[in-house]
Structure formats: C-alpha cells, structure tokens
Length: 249
Image 1 (tube, rainbow, N blue to C red):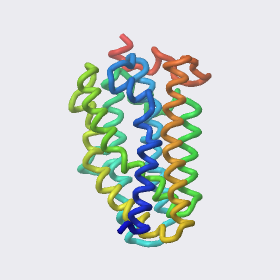
Image 2: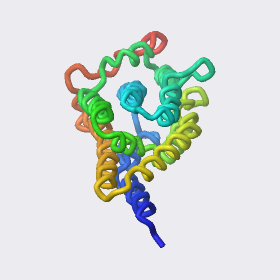
Image 3: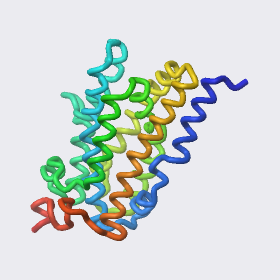
Image 4: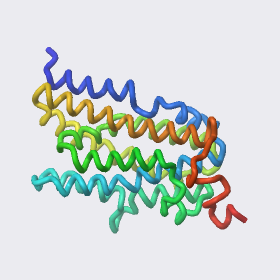
C-alpha cells in the first residue's frame, strides 16, 4: 500500500526525471566531446560561481537553524566545499580543473567574467535559502538526489574525449560521488519527515522545481553566450583572456 510519504518521495523524484539539468543539450555536447576548448573554459568559469556560493548558502541556512542536531548534520557540507586540514575541499578541486583546462585559477576565483545570468540565478538561490522556510531550503538542496548520475556520466565522457581529463582534474566529481549520497540521505529523510501536510509537500516540491530552474538557467545562459548564437554579453569572459601563463605563452 502506497503511503503519503512514498507518494511524495515519488513526486520529488519525478521532478528530477523531468527537470534536472542533465537533460540540457549543453551536457550532451560537453560529455560527448563536442565542446570546443573555450566552451569548456566558459563552463568551468561559470560553474565556479555556483560552487563558491554553495558554502555561503549553507552558512546562511545554518545561521537560521536553532536545532543543534540539524546544524551538526549540515556542517559537513561547508567543510566538503571549503576544505579542512585533512580535505582540500571541492572549491580547490574545481580550481584544479580550471588549471587543467588552461585557465588561471586566480582569474577563475575572482569571478570576473561570470555571465550576468549565472550571477542572477545563483544569487537568487542563496537568497531563497536565506529567506524561505527551512523546509523549502532543505527541499531545494534535493537536486543532489539526481547528481550521482550526471557526475558518473561526466567523468566517463570527459575522460574519453578530452586531453585535460585525468584523475587530478576529475577529483571534484570523484569526491562528490562519495559525499553527495550522505548529504542527500539526510536531506531527503528530513524533508519527508517535516513535509507532513499537503501544503508543506506542495511547498517542498515547488522549492525543488525552483532549484532545477536555477541549474537549467545557468546552462541556457552558457549556451546563448558561447554556443548559439554565441553572443557574449558585456563584461562576460572573452576567449583568450584569463588563461594561465603557460597557456597564454
């Protein structure tokens, strides 16, 4: 017999099946080896803005949480990205990817050249987590339910199709395959426990839809600027800039 909890989990998973950004054509292009070096660099630069904002999003969330148990459970997300004495962290691993594709990591870390639409989308996500209910904030993080598949496909596709791909440059994605299941197991259980009315379940589902829109809109912006019609907005990264000294020479 299907319970309300089971039906709600199925509803959340269906959102991912229909709306997660693994369905975006940019990922087909990237994973299939069809991106130019500059399209890969543009993706690395813009995705960094999302990566570096995640710990700030999580810190904003924790600042509102009164339950110490929830704060303890959530704290590891910040450490996974920012790093610890024992773990270099996801942000540093992403900058290693940037180096591998020929970018100056200091340029990438400066967030210069990030597309305006990327900034708008990511900043909107941080505000959402800061301002909405805790249930909505946690529910928005549940795109992690769908991430292992895209990470596995990305590792396989990049290793098969690009010279820059190796164990070092793929370290971010390899580590997320280990880190994300822990996060999503906790987050999903928390949402299922706390979305105990139809109204709350609707709120949580809409929060997850919002997050899929955040991810999708970043790729739409990337496609328009660097694939077709390849119209780069003022202030965004221009190919040939922000390269490592070795690449520039």
